[in-house]
Image 1 (cartoon, one colour):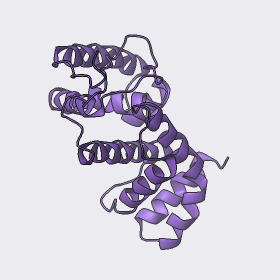
Image 2 (cartoon, rainbow, N blue to C red; image 1 turned 135 degrees about the vertical axis):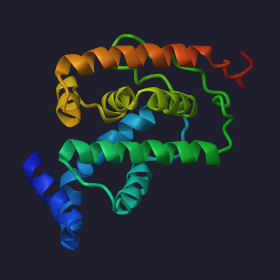
Image 3 (cartoon, rainbow, N blue to C red; image 1 turned 90 degrees about the vertical axis):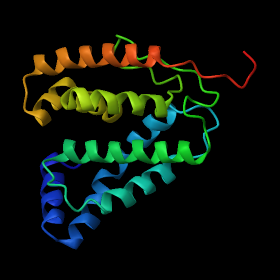
Image 4 (tube, one colour; image 1 turned 90 degrees about the horizontal axis):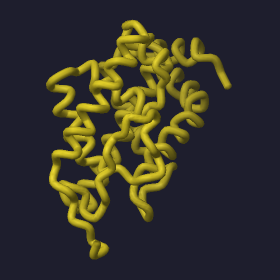
Length: 196
């Protein structure tokens, strides 16, 4: 795998207007983008019709349109990519007519045990709504959740990206998970379509 400095150099060249930088960057990051997409799709309910390649392609289109981003490094790029994928899945869920509270998908509470289980489907609409509320109260805690849960960054990577001590990330990660769990538990339970 190519080194993060090479990826960072290509991101900076792309930001400065070098059109060939994007073409050279994509082969270096494609495998990680596919891994991110697979992680997201495992969190969806079984039978989800959006496939890994489609999710990567949609994220790619959104990444190409990122004109005002000042790329910091590889982790920053993958953070933005993960956010793009999350938005694609949210748009997809809305377009599929799923109800605001999950439309047949059981609510999954965020647990205290990291990482958050990926075997169970997550109500992305409810989680997104809760994350938006958290962002209004504390943008850094919301960003920590996005980086840890959606991107899969380690505590050390998040600390480096946010330029805060590791202990701050650990503390705020615990507090954010507890806040999100309370928020999701307080939401009305989804009506299941399987009769249970």
